[in-house]
Amino acid sequence: MRLLLDTNVVIWMLGVSSRLPPNVRETLSDPRNALFVSTSTIHEMAIKVSIGKLRVPNGFPESLADRGCTFLPLGVEDAWRVASLPLLHRDPFDRLIVAQAMMNRLTLVTSDRQLADYGVPVILI
Image (cartoon, rainbow, N blue to C red; front, side):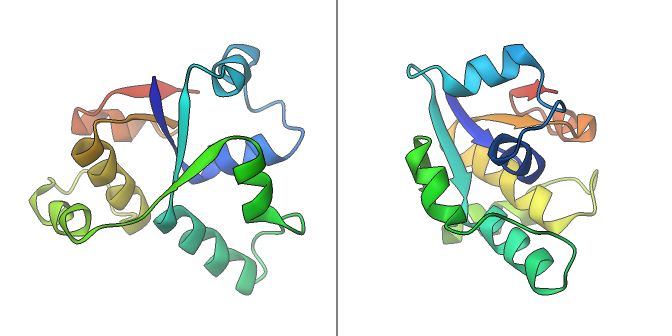
């Protein structure tokens, strides 16, 4: 599978968190699955780090790459796709990753049940 990780999943994956069920941890560590992290997710995390709402380990982006994640650049088409999405969710970063999942045919891994309402394939935590 080709999986796009929501911000919360990225954070939980980097830490020792019981928030990721064993079956999801197994899915994320399965080498047959391709893991993608949107640059919009990195942007969201950077904002939260800069205002003191989030702490991440040193070498954070490198540790994602070490875990086999590929960074997915936010393209113009991805960004513009947001304009055609119904306003089911107000978080602009979540709307961006939904658009990227649609445009790149990815399954979104998230704990946000509302994102499934967009009709993208979702693995809910």
